[in-house]
Amino acid sequence: MPGAKSRRHLYIRFGSYLLGLMLFYVPASLFVRAFYGVQGQHLVGNLCDSLNLRMGVGGLLKIETWQKVFAADPRSLGIFAVIAVAFLFGPLFCGWVCAAGSLSEGLSRLVPDRFKIDIAGRVNAAAIRYGFLSGFMILPFIGLSAGCAFCNFRILNFMSLGITGGFVPALTSTYIVVIALWLVLGGMFMKGGRGWCNFLCPVGAIQNLFHGLGARLGFTYKLKYAPEKCRTCLNCVKVCPMRAAAPAAEGRWRTANGAGVLFNRHTCITCNDCVAACPHGALSYGVGKAAVPAPAPSPQPAGAALGAAAGRSEV
Image 1 (tube, rainbow, N blue to C red):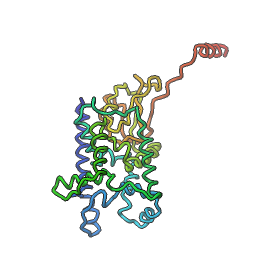
Image 2: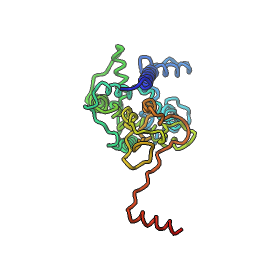
Image 3: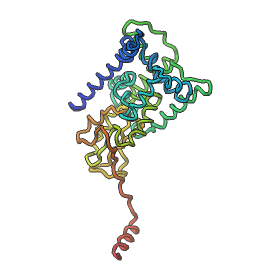
Image 4: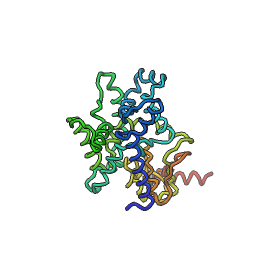
């Protein structure tokens, strides 16, 4: 059972996702209303119509996209703002704002763990998501595209419209497939509920790509691990929605107690669930060097050890 600190943290994250829903999705779309209101326009849009993050990722290899950026076209700036935040602070959009990711994560909490697939330490999710990202960005150059029907942002917008009495288009076969992958297989029956985010979200993948680069610098914010405080209780592994935390192989690292834990920055969304769940203070979020456990010494054959001892006795 989560402690009081973890529960309080989850409540805060839940509130931040509700805020994200109100900011970017109709009928509220507070961000879009405010953005265009400053320009003297009274437009109501949503995450797909205004910022269009997903198509923004798909256009990063196109010259036209960069021309719009240099022309200060506001519709082209959304993905660059998200990338900049990810580079400096981590994928905060995924971990704290994206209502589409939070919905599948929340549904996963309704299903007992014994019925769920757990990919932690078993599947290289980063390789799959970067492979999907590469394909997504290359498709336009071969005359294909992953259309809006294959987008959980768009479907969530339809859901919010339906709940508030707005018009919702009829379900198509593509929408049904996306809902099955996003909310059922990758949500309810995936440990953490972030299967779609892990494998099929180009917006999340591009953020983690830049977060992986930014985390190497001392002035950026990132998840930090203090192995000298780690007791290998694995609370962080249990709560990680992206399954970015996994137990280290026995004997791989030297830690204060146990084998330690490995963290994958290419799937971590800096939600800080692990920080809130760690009872020993081994995890934190901030600037500075991101420490890892010291490598454990390699075992030597008995003969090599005797030879080394003999060599030392001659000095």
